[in-house]
Amino acid sequence: MQSRHIRRCALAVLLAAVAGVAQAHTGHGTHSLMQGLAHPFGLDHLLAMVAVGVWSVSALPPARAWMGPATFLAALLASAALGLAGFTLPWLEHAIALSVVMFGAMLLVAARPLPTSAGLALVALAASMHGLAHGAEAPAGGLAGFTGYAAGFLLTTAALHVGGVAIGLSVRRWLGERRAAVLGGLGAALGAAGIYLFGQLAA
Image 1 (cartoon, rainbow, N blue to C red):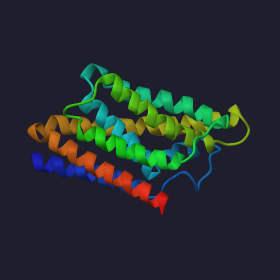
Image 2 (cartoon, one colour):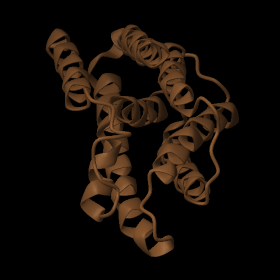
Image 3 (cartoon, rainbow, N blue to C red):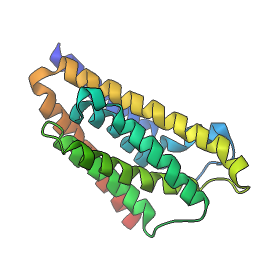
Image 4 (spheres, one colour):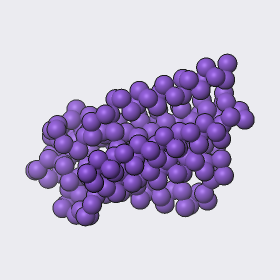
């Protein structure tokens, strides 16, 4: 029974990766709600956002598990507004890839987690990098054009967080003593994916 659930979790991660094989910073528009909904399905964004959900239910106290997704969404929106205003950072795409590596490391130690404040600070930092990228690609035309696009990427981000929460809860409920090993495996896979993405940018 446990091996079946391990396979299901692995399949969920694989499907998430396949769904976002192409990084979604370019190649589609950013002028509507629907385009905003599609935007976070780049592999770097997708993996990070799912990881936030998994980490939140695996490392935070049960009563505070909502704080991981909420922190990410708040920082994402605030930094997207900064990006819309023209603020950016050098090597931003590289930082986003490294955020995936960071979330992998956080899952590796989820059985012995960081203090809540430190973990949430890292979540906010990663979200800020992703938000700046979203904001930099926002449509010209100011706040009116930004609103639908932002609503779209926030809705998709929230849905990806929920998917990560579902994976994390499944691991906690069904895998028992294997939970730490499975989270470690997910973290290692996530870290490897982030290193691959970074290498693609550096090539």
